[in-house]
Image 1: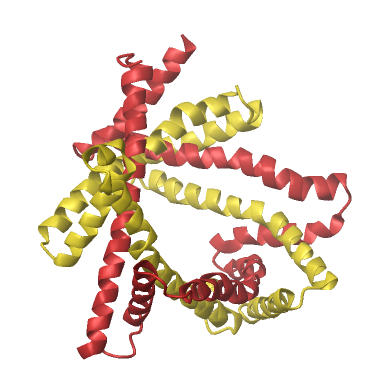
Image 2: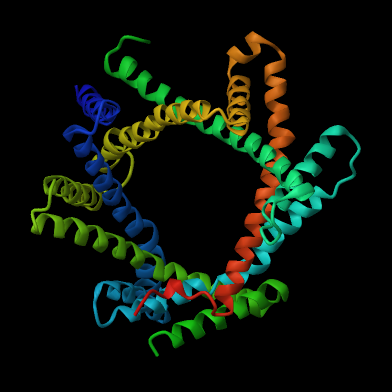
Length: 199
Length: 206
């Protein structure tokens, strides 16, 4: 009985959201706002249990690491973001977090640039490696905006656009597949678990 | 005082982190562990900021009886009820909190994302109607990749899964590599601007 009730709730909310395919309506808006509320409400106890208790309460009050009171006060300063005169205080916790940017400079250079470059400089021993090399170079040329994309240079950058279109197409295809598999999941739920039409 | 000290904190910590990356040592590791423990203590309070923001936005709508304010009541009630059941009955398996997740949150978010399947299809149709050769290449690549992932593709021709794999491994790899390099250079430049105090928008306005 309880399972049937649970399925009815889930099915109704699923249908409320699907109703947007017809047009915007009060059922969809209700479900949309409910989703925002439940998602936020879901995060609160989880953050309390998985972040506040182990990293603030336990170390300070049970393990006596009183120096952690300082970052806790820094964290409380976030709340001043909404005050008119003291909103500048919220810059301190933000600044503390932003410090990691120093690590981001060498890390992003290494992982996104140097590693990619190293892999792009492999020996061109077959047609595929030649295509990959040509694609990488022409795309990088496309993103160089200090020179007008005209003449021979423009032809090269145009090849880059074609490569990017194939890449976007592949990503698009994957995204469609992921969304359709979610859609199949919901249809299976409605026809199977809820209506019992498919086993 | 209001902007300079936070800026000094960012620049100071930033250069120490640069040193930590290039000069690994016991001291730099201790510094990193200290920063992580402080960040973990600060992070739960950022959620309070999010909650307050939500309550302020929807509270104002209710207070002013703005158009569709009734839905804001639904949002705030949902926050209260979900958080309340989480605190009272816990977050483990078999609790009302998990019931809300499995029968309310999860079905709705999955349906919300599945809605995009329809809009993606309509976007594809619009791109097809644009009749530009580049949009056609995008759609053909997408079509082959999609067909290559399902049994129907192999049933039509054994070349379709192979073509799909070739697209993913060769031109797609070139595109991803070119874009990743550009993104990497952009991220490095932005990080440098923050580190040197040129980019300050994260501090907000006065």
